[in-house]
Image 1 (cartoon, each protein chain N blue to C red):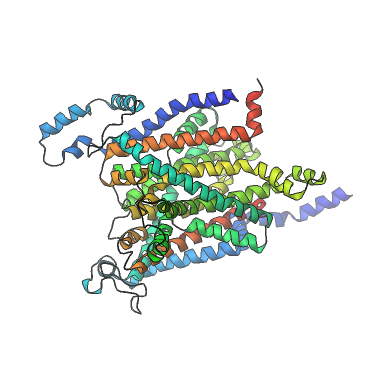
Image 2: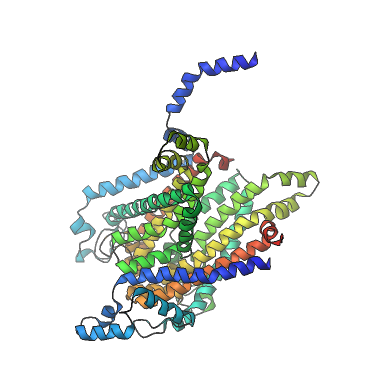
Length: 308
Length: 303
């Protein structure tokens, strides 16, 4: 078991370096940052000096090397408007994490029970209604749902603020908005994997042994359906982190997504690069965690590594 | 005796069998698809939306009514002549919503075509050749998969600027790795088949085997993935336009319309309804079709 974890961790660092290489490489296609900073009111010599100062005349690989070595020490340079990328990112990160965690909890609470009910009552009207809700949930654009929620609950009933992160209740609408489409997906996955598990032979065996129905469903079926559900919840969590971009903008939530959108609008390439690299690392870390959780849940992986 | 009976029966039915073989895969798929009421209504809905998109070309004048400015009719409430009211530039919201259908459809279909074509090619090369080719391709694919797709689009848009074309290419390119992964898995199930062996034995070239024998037989999962992706792609496209990183402002793209409408949320909330419902209906229709395709292609799931 430990060997599995160590192996994954050892692979993680080179993977992160390669991924950041891709991001850095793509972002450097954007052209000359010195030109962007200089604008129109600098002479050609001044721009050339700036380029020299920023180390832009070095070959690409050298520039990337410098970037990644500094980045490992937590120095991602400065944005266009003089803000330190790392500090800015770290100050925004808690908001995004809180939003992602709350909407993840909401998502699981909304979707898994519904999926289980739909699977148990399959081909009844309950199943039909749950499936319909799920398809509609998949079809609603998150940002529009956000606007509608603002209309009803913030402007209409005045129950919660329209945006920002001022009181604890400000999180309700963004979390719900971020949760809805993912909940629909998880609900469908829960239903279909549970259906697969319910038709398995070992369930017949369990029933034949006289195990009572609730234990059959909860322990035997759900236990086996859990792995695909964890996979999808885990991948949804990483999508949440990346996808809060839209929700954060709708609700002016001061998180990382908001920071990225502002940076892209302002052509702040260094800020965008730093944010994307850091977010990718974060998502990769989460996926790594999910994989490790698997190993704990899935006896097959455990068996693979405990042989020796 | 029994064996004989059977074999003559099969001889007699050769003609029937030939007829069946002539029936194309698409035909069989269509027959399965037709049985699914939801999927058929989704298809009808999409056809209606396409017709609206085409018809709006002849009903409204692009320069004056869709992108123009009419200062006398700004922000009117819904009425008989303007069923959804008018926006901050005095343009009829109904006209713009109908006209905007083309952008969502265009972006959805063309972006997914990009991801599907490149993804299928990359994935089938990896899946077909196996060995070192496969591991190199798949390691690269996995690296790209680690960057959330939405961030890849953001990188693309911030590097190349915001325009309709860039949004299409960005959305398309960002999910190539997802399609490649799926295509590879699907091709691998076909790779060892007897008909592939047979084609090899006859001396068919690798390219021919991939395109004539492997891909057609491995295509169902890719097709289902493509349909589902069209749905999420339409939402993503609208979201990017909403953020101001997609289709630029005067064009009546639904997400861009919502971004405009949001500024008047307090006093004119009606402006936000029509474009949102339009996105939802379109995506809903595509999702229904996707579900129908999945059921038709994989009868096992239907039970």
